[in-house]
Amino acid sequence: MSKQFDVDGLKDCDQLVLDRLQQSSSIGREKGMHMDELCQQLKLPMEKIKESIRSLEDEGLIYSTIDEFHYKAITVFFECYPACNAVASYFVPSFEY
Image 1 (tube, rainbow, N blue to C red):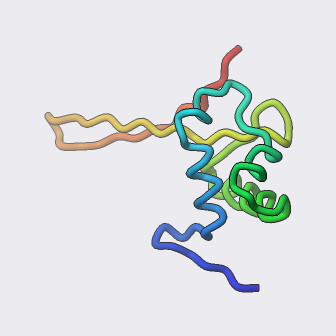
Image 2: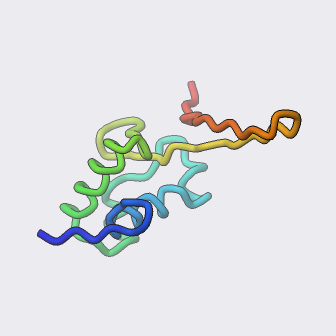
């Protein structure tokens, strides 16, 4: 089985799934995106989508929302602190209660 990695270490399929989940139309969805929708939009077989989801979850880049079929990308914010020339980053899963 051949795996193709880009400079970030993600397989091509993983990157496609992550890019789709990071699009503004996906981030705004409270419940995330269903795997079937990812499959349809990316025109990839379900098994590839599932492999990528497992991989991206293991890397901490996405998380499941309302069930094991809906996923969202982790949102990362960066803040610059000019006084100490430092950059802090933190993630905030957008849970709404």
